[in-house]
Image (cartoon, rainbow, N blue to C red; front, side, top):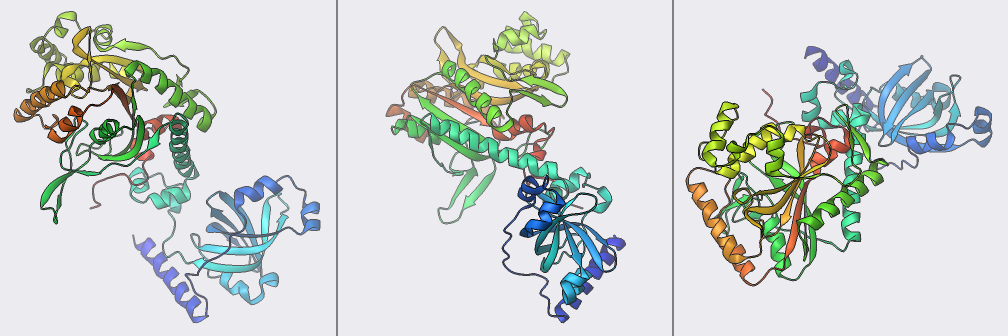
Length: 491
């Protein structure tokens, strides 16, 4: 700590000297006409003789990442958003301006105008003719980590992580490309992007514990949304046939490598279709995104190759449970399933319904096995209060979840559009809620009223953007793909 404090004081002293010399340590606008990546792409193969003859001018700006002084000459690497390039500052070229070079530190942001040449070691370099200090850095970069390997520090100080770990910056570039590819795909298929409320009078559309807030002017409690589903389906009632929202959801749950209380979800709805259509559509969407962003359908996640080539298997939930070794008698009733779960040391809340007991068994016994893309289909109705029943098996609903690398990526179903059935299910959920299940769905009278006007048959889907990006970037933790993840306060 003392070392860092001493370095900060040294830099503040330099800042004061600069100001006394008439140099502003925090400059204004600067025209960075050239970028490191572009210069390397255009001139890395150009011989020195040709560079010298052409006298190629350039003007760059960036953060100093390396600094080596040899008395009357100094080399530095500066880093902009695209990469790094070397600059060369000589006293006989800069004259009195060379005094500024002596006040520079690693981490400072500078602008440099000059011409390109190649050093004796062959490195493309800017010979600086004019140097401008744009920002004086008062804290040293975390040099001792040589890339900032302290994980908690990386998440808390993402700005440093982005500065010293180029692969992290690339992860978030990829995330941006994934989101754009999804938007392009949906718009090409006739979907309209919409926005729905993030503060809602009822937390609906998913089974999760919400965050509460309060609206002073309306004098009412509101909830940060756990899902936009019930509002997007109101739009189907209103005549929209294909809508989507790339939305932020908030769930008051634990934090893990797969969960963050604030996360990004794609939800989309299409009228006159069912969950069978969505399975084929999902394969088309995800493979299109992988091809556009990565150029391949074979990805590697934590050392395992995952082949995205469709079609993907479709396995009923009860079949998947039996194939994982769950005996048939344990699937016959709530009590039998609960007893078997206890013998397997699977934690199940005592108030859990039959469907939720099966879900806990599935999470423990089946989910970790689902490495290659796999649809698990046909869930118990208790787990899916918003999904349409299977006509031939009314205890089940037309729903699927897509799993890859042992984790859920997609949840989708044929939408329930019978207002009487929907009201009955909400009341059943309310009873579960009264028994202590905080994640059960609340009664939503306004949504029931909308359904009473008539919603067309439809299918809807949610895709976890963070988890999808984790897979496509081989990131082991959700915190690696969220720029500013939540964490406990520092001591």
